[in-house]
Length: 372
Ligand code: PMP
Image 1: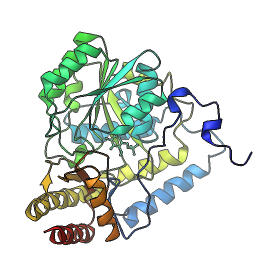
Image 2: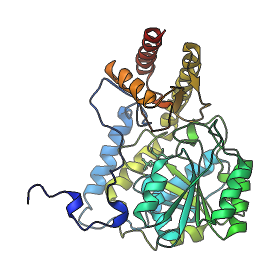
Image 3: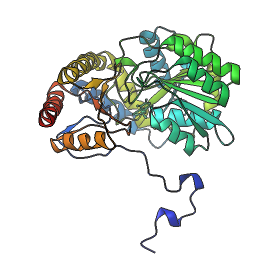
Image 4: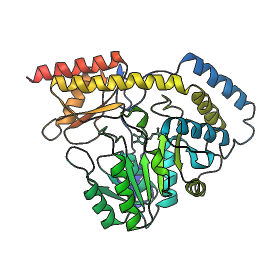
C-alpha cells in the first residue's frame, strides 16, 4: 500500500506520465530563475499590510467580498493611470495569480472539444492549463530569432480555428515584445476564423521599453489583457493576477470562478500594495536599468542575447545536445541559479539586485575564460 504511485491511481489519461510544472527551488546564494522582483517590500508597506490584514482578520468569520469590488476598482484606477486607456470596475477581474485568471479564461472559452494556440517558445503554463482544463493545445510558430511572423501566425490561426489565442508580450522566456500591429493582425485573423478570444498576457509589461496594449481593448470585445502583481509589484508571494476586458468577458468568467475565490487576506494585502504603487514602480526603473546592463555585459562577454522588454534576459547560444543544461549546472556550481526553460541552446537569467547580477556576470565570465 505504501508504495502506491500516481500510475496506480485512476487519473485522467491526459495526465498520465506527466510531471508538475515548477522551476527547481534550490537553496543557493543567488536565485535568478523565476523572474521574481529581488527587492523585499519596503517597511512602510509591510506595516500597512499588517494594519489592513489586522482589520480584515476581525471579519474572517464571514466570507470575503465575492466580487472584490474595492480591489477591482483600485486595479482599474492603476490601469487607467498607467495603461493609456480608461477602464473601470466593470472591465476588471482578479484572481489568485494570473495563472488562475488564465485557468478561468480557459474554463470559460476553452474546454473539451475546443482548442487554444500559443506561439512557442512561450509561457509553458498556457499549454499546461489548457491540458488541465481539457482544452486541446496547438503550438504555433515563431521565427528563429523568436519574433512572431504575423503572416505565418495568422495562417496557423486560419488552419486550426482555435477558440483561444495566447500572445505573451513581453514574451517569456525569450523577453521580446510583440508589436501592436502584430497583435491586431492576429486578432483579425482569429475573428475571421471563428469568434475566438485573444488573450494578451502582459505579465511583464511594466518592464517594457514600449507601451501597454490596453488601448487595443477599445472596440474589440474578444480581446483580454492579463496582468499580475507578481513581477512589477514585487508581490509574487501574494498571488494576485487580474485582467481587463469588455464587461461581458468579466461576466462570463464569473460563471466558472469558485465562490469567494479571493480570500479577505489576499484582498487586504493587495489593496495595501496598491497604496504603495509609486514606490514599487521605483524598483521597476532600477530593474530595467539592471536588465539593460545584463544585456550589454553579456554581449560584451561574447554571448548572444535576445532583445528584452522584460525583467529577464535570454542568452546563448550553446551548441550541441544538452549544452545549455551543462552551462546551467556550471553556473549553479558557482552559486547562481538561472533557468533552463528547455529552449535548445538558450538559458534565461532574471535581473536581480546589482550585487546578484555581478555574481552572475562573474560566473559566466569565468566560464567563458575556462572554455577559451
Ligand atoms: N504569465 C507569464 C508570461 C508569466 O511568466 C507568469 C509567471 N511566471 C505568469 C503569467 C503567472 O504569474 P502569476 O500567476 O504569478 O500571476
